[in-house]
Image (cartoon, rainbow, N blue to C red; front, side, top):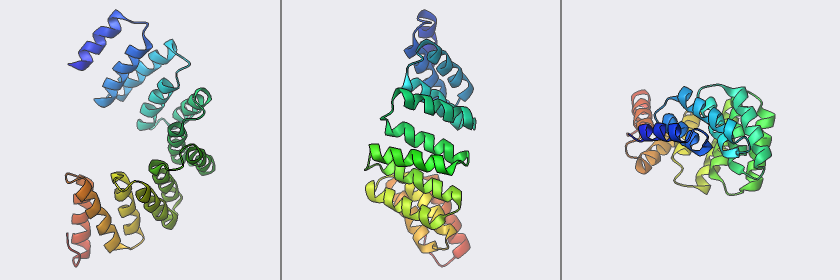
Length: 205
């Protein structure tokens, strides 16, 4: 197994930050967030000036619901790599979940300054509006994301959910069908189309 080889590599090269990071990525892919975090922490202790390793550790903490330390790690990463739009985007998502909507908005604004055509950042803004309860602005942001990247599958799923919440049932169905065309094995599309068909009855699957 690849993870066994990486563990052996760590034994052979215990002072290699790259090797510890790679082992962390392997654990993360397997869903072992605690083991991944331990590896990233070790890598960071060996290479404290790596924005990438800061982001790796922040990501697994965020996935595990450890929000404030994740935000602080992204902020440190930005000091090391201040022109990275992806870090601003990811920080914005954490700040959104922390309920710090003003700071999240500023993070997404900075991300768009650095990468004006980013569909992902526009979808993240949709998530921000959704968390604030502003479903109309959320729908507009998700549509904007899709305009910039018609293959952004997550945006179709999110837009469908918001449109259903707004009572735009037919448009929500259309979103899930578009998602299904892009991703035929999408469980989200299948489940939501089945739910809409069951609840609304008159709409085709």
